[in-house]
Length: 225
Image 1 (cartoon, rainbow, N blue to C red):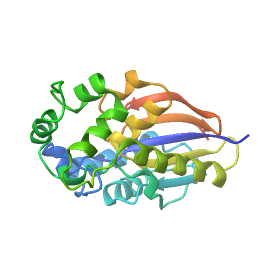
Image 2 (tube, one colour):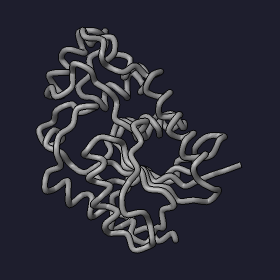
Image 3 (tube, one colour):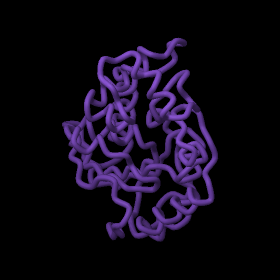
Image 4 (cartoon, rainbow, N blue to C red):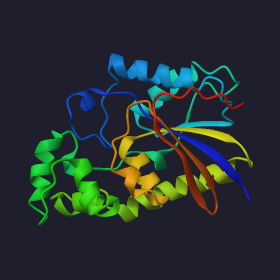
């Protein structure tokens, strides 16, 4: 049975992150701080040999991966392969809207008041939080949980088929995506926390499931070769 160590890194800060706007399938460029996030993550992972390096196909993830891999000293790939399965949640017509304005609209579809997105996940759970966006979107573009988790599981299947047992694998992805993955592997208590830009979450992934070894780490210098 193949098992890999999956290093999930959130992309660097974007202008939508800075202005607190919802950003799923829509994209905004990295800020100067966001570029720095990518380099810092790369410096902390510089001694890890990645047998495969991937990102979602959104430019903020691709560019972060490029900056991260430019710091690698362990013979890893220099450019990420793009995997659309690890895109951010699609927020549909809520894309680009101020997050608190979006919460006001979402609250109209629920009997429970949510102060922010983390509060929603705490009270409602990850799956039903995604489903609320799908329910409230008048254009029916927002992604529900079943669609989201199906594509992410397809991404896991690809990685396990592509790599051999013991490989270290990098995927630069997105905050809600990483939170939902951690939740899927049994850690709803972690999923309520926002992921920092450039933070590392490490999962031991196999066909039997995933074990969360590290979550939302912005400090550790990794030395796995």
